Image (cartoon, rainbow, N blue to C red; front, side, top):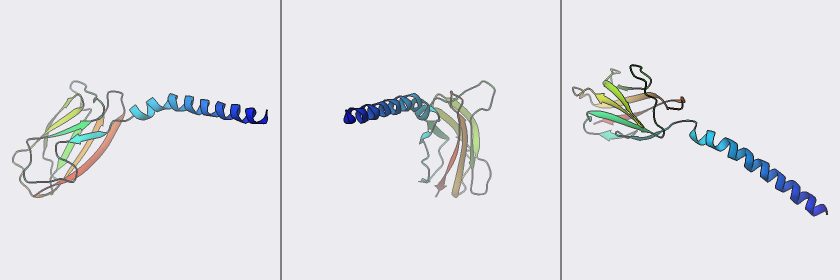
Length: 130
């Protein structure tokens, strides 16, 4: 009799814990987008700049006509912007890189995106042009 009491009590706790985790797990796993890929890898050392930087995220990005919702800034080693026109395509944020840029050194990439569900993500990384 004593054993059955503790088994039932433990079973009830496990049930409620599982129920609680089931309720919150979709919000935890889908609450925020993350950078999943970049055409220039964070920390990379490259020999020449590509025409575009393509950032790929884990969730579709919000796109509103004529509104700057998502942005990417690319700064050369002197702190000057080399980013051109940006465009959002589903999971991807594409930004043109100024083709006249040849300055060797460390570049900084900063971005702010908003997933379609409204959650913003701010991040950044560096790469080196050798």
